[in-house]
Image 1 (cartoon, rainbow, N blue to C red):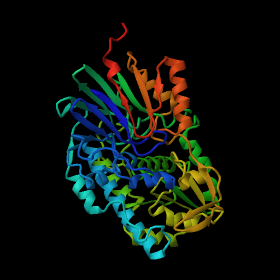
Image 2 (cartoon, helix red, strand yellow):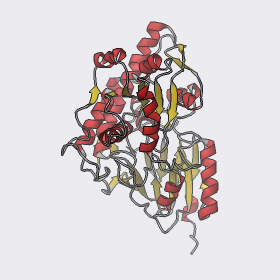
Image 3 (cartoon, rainbow, N blue to C red):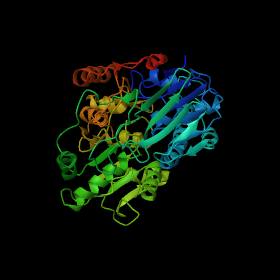
Length: 471
C-alpha cells in the first residue's frame, strides 16, 4: 500500500502512543510511548516490537511525557538506529524522564527482589540507564515550523501544541506514487488561556487528523482552580495536616507550585512551606527557567527574577536524604511529589505514611488512568496496594479539576475549527473507549466529520485519499 497508518498504542487507551506511517518506501514512527496502568496493559511493554524495529527511518516525538517517549530505549535495544527528531526543550526533558524511568525500574526491581513480592524471579527492569544513554545519542533537534525531510517521501513540521514546554503537534506531508497527502498528529493538545503555557498553534489544512480524545466526553470544571484549591486546602491547614499532591514532574508540578505561590502572595492561603520532592521536577524546573522566553510558555508569567519561575521559599528536594527528612516534618505543609498517578517513585513512600491519618489531605491534580492508584483514590477506594502492602486511606481525598494540561471537548473543537477546511477523516486515539465514542458522536453531530476508532495494532490503508476528491 502506498500510504498507511498502523496504530501500535494509545488505541482504546490513554497510553503507549506509537503510530507508524508508511509512505511508499519511507516509514516514520510518531511517538514511542510506554504503556502504563493495569498489569495487563503494563505487560504490553515486554512484548517484542509489533513492527521491524529497524524499519522506521526516523522517530518523531510530540513531547516528553513517558507515555509518548518511554518505550524508546526498548526500541533501540531491539535494533532501531535512526534519528529521533523533536524540539530542543523536549529533547532536554526527555533525557530527564527516560533516565528517571530507567532508574525507577532498576530500583523497583532491586526492591522487589529484596522483599520477594515480584512474580518474576528475578525481577528485571525493562531497560537500564545505559540503554537510555544509547537512545539519547540518536536525538536530533528541530525548531517549530522548521521542515525536516524524512527519507524520500515525508517532510515533517513541528508546531506548538501548548501542552507542556516544547510540546508539538506534527504535520507530515507525504508524497507517494499515487499522490500527495497531509497528515497531522495532535500529540497531546494543550488548553487555551491556561497559566504557564501558551495557546496551541492553529490546525493546518490536512487530509487526515490523528487526534487525542482524553477529555472527549467532557468540559473541564468551570470553577476557577484557585478557588478550588483555597477551599480544599484551608480545612487541612487549619487542622495541622500535611497536604500531599501527587503530580507529574513535567509541567504539572511547576503549574501547581506557581498557583500556590500566587494564593499565598495574595493571602488566600497562609504562608506554609511548599516542598517539591522530586529530583526530576527540580531538573525540569531548571529547563523551564532556561526556556522562560520560549513561545510555548505564557509570556505573562509574573517571574520572580528574570530567569526563575519561583521564589526561594519553594523548596526543592533532590537527594534521598532530603526526601527522608520530610518524614519527620509536621503539618501544616504541602508536599508535591511525582508520579501524578501514584504509579511509582518517592510519592509512594509519602502515601504510605500520610494516607492513614485523617487530618491529612491527598490532592489529585490531573487525569488518573484506569488501573492506577490515583484512579483508585479518585473512585473512592479506601485501601490501596503499595510496595506489596495494603494501605488504609483515612486521609481526605480531593480531586481538583481544570489543572489538566489536556484540552477538553470544547477546546478540541476550537482547535479543529481553527482550520476552515475540515480534515477528510479523523482518527481518535489516546482516549478510553467511552471518551473516544462520545467524541466521535459529537464530531459527526457538530461538524459532520467521520471519526474512526482504530484498534490496537490495526493498519489503516489510506490509498482512498487519492481518489477524486469531492468539489
